[in-house]
Length: 427
Image 1 (cartoon, rainbow, N blue to C red):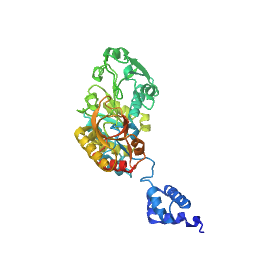
Image 2 (cartoon, helix red, strand yellow):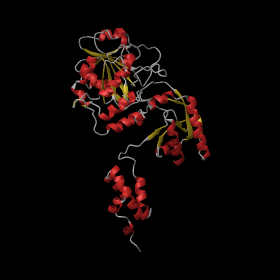
Image 3 (cartoon, rainbow, N blue to C red):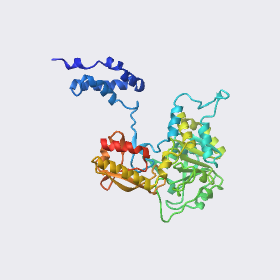
Image 4 (cartoon, rainbow, N blue to C red):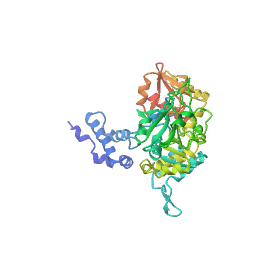
């Protein structure tokens, strides 16, 4: 009898195969070799024939040399933190690719001298927020607050309302974040009520700044009162407002969500995230008075919080380019979403899948517009599809509700419907 080991194609021969050699150039030798070894083991076990090795290797290779997996967001949460929050626009993706090589990120091509880093993104931010005299970008929203606290209040006091001492997710709490910079917190008011007089009484020679934090992931209703930045501007210290979700201008669907431009009518400095309602890459935005922003930009910590060229390119393209996927998802009509859900359910039913189109409720998520429900539509499947779809190709994340797996369409672009249909049919 033939020894099965002699039938196994040699590794060097497989690596020389044109299709596999092309994969090596794209993914790297080590990753491809792992797939080769796996296919060779299958030959030894009799699971495949030697002639099937090349196809088996190619089929097992990932699309990119990274373990991150694209996921269709059918949860109904537009800005899902576990899914990376805002999906980037086509313009932002193209900008990322363009910035991947050597660029003029810190070079003035006209003079050949060092240029202002991120000038395009900074100019785009100021165009989007006319009240901002200056802008700076760091690596996330928390970093923007840390830089402000370190530069303006290290060894001094930050005056903040008790009802704004929030937890921002994954166990990270704003008070601990601020204290880590060397600042001290001066809490004013109560959990549900604070007045301008509370702030006025707390401000003194040791005050670094007043901090206003938008409670972006919860809502307090009932016997409440809060103080707008405009009411604090004349107390003789900077007013810093963390608006959280990164809305730059008022939005008709989000009347209770603060925006950067309006907030700067009262605050001296606004901090926000770039990967939430703005719909861009993860970034921390600092917008406000020129002198304050310059102090922050030149602080030594700013270097450690600096963003790279990819973030700057994607941010600028988000600001200059067409409507983002987040903006389009917000604007989608419930009627159009239901039409899409009905079309998908009909196709699935024809293929033998028990599927129904149902009305549903979506949310903004990502620390934006807490309590706001967006009318949506979903495809309802049996509950066991939730787990099966997470392992599908493409992977799909839905939500379990009332014993069913709902695939909510609000966070999915219409062009993703075909991929969603394929995933359900193949899982």
